[in-house]
Length: 332
Image (tube, rainbow, N blue to C red; front, side, top):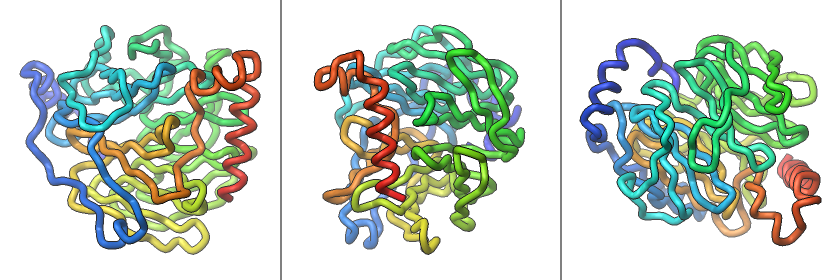
């Protein structure tokens, strides 16, 4: 979302909200020959999302019942889609009763089946209910809170504060925050061992145990949200960019491969825990990148309902974190 914060946007955002319309149609993100050869597919999860002409949807979360929540940076509300199926339209969403305001609703994550959201303009982290509404404020004093990701080892939240040179470690139970790293980060994603953050158009990996930098992708123009690959995609990072591209980075060699191009502004991404696909934002839509056979994206916290049937509620949390830790080890 970088380089879009500022008072100059507020008029465009307010006009968009008042008129209830989306921004102008943008180019379609299409797979390159390399992306097709690798076996990826691209589909549209939802279209016609309001934008301010550049930024529209930002955060993507998942409900315990199998639905998807999309935050609209321009419209100021979270949109809830009851099913995780492609071909939907923004007009069919249930909008949150909470109006967060323009320039505010940002990244969404889940920890232990509870939804949390970063609010940029108000500089806070809040808890959401399953309908995308505000439940309570977890912490304040996180100016320009934008990216948010779950620490898979202890359920804490990593929160980037774009342009404010801090990645926070937030305890959502104790309602406390401490500095994890001094870095001006945007999109965040985690494995059990590493926090990956967009910093100055690089994807930087920080070891979660001590904050030491362990990876640098090199320069990626417009880099924003990113996710790690698993299975046959282990050892790769997938980066959504502000200049309408999707880039694969080999962690071992730093070789960059453009998988898709021609799109609109890409911001944050989220791994779909129900099918291991990757949902990625564009100016007025959310697209789905499906991996080749044997591949996936992760690791991410699963909504609690995905494990309840097989395990029972009593063993849910411990099993979920162990499972994700094993997945992440396999990808390193």
